[in-house]
Length: 186
Image: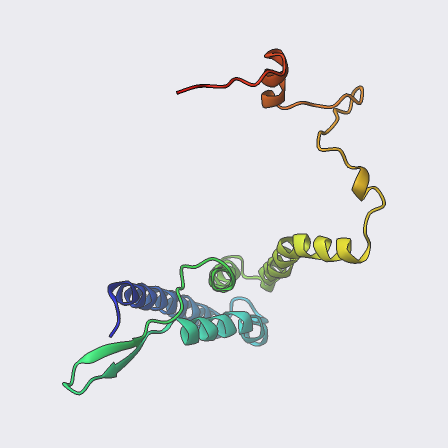
């Protein structure tokens, strides 16, 4: 038996998947009508299917991991077996949903501008991934190529004008009080 939280998650996942599939279906139908009947853009037939591969892969993965699984018990009632992974969580599922929406936006821009050059916007995806992985890459690089000054780093920073250390407000208050600790008795 599923708890209330799993039932709510299954409901949210079903609504999210439904909205993604409806939006994707409507936009892709409009794009196909535009490409095949109107002929806008001219060379769009071949490239549209190639550039829509990320959309199809992400939709398939989101469907597989997020779709709730139901079964029928001995009394004939429909019961929740598995709620599916939470589609509102941050991380990989969030990025896949972003890729779906970005691809659908590019489809709309392709129709509006009548050019396949808008598909260059898909380059945002690997650039964003590299930007997000920059911290991990720098950590790995730090493990293999340690800095020579790593042990000599002071906890305070210096301003660029005269090289004096910059103090925090807390440090300044502490020095104004004469480095005395205030003790409170109850």
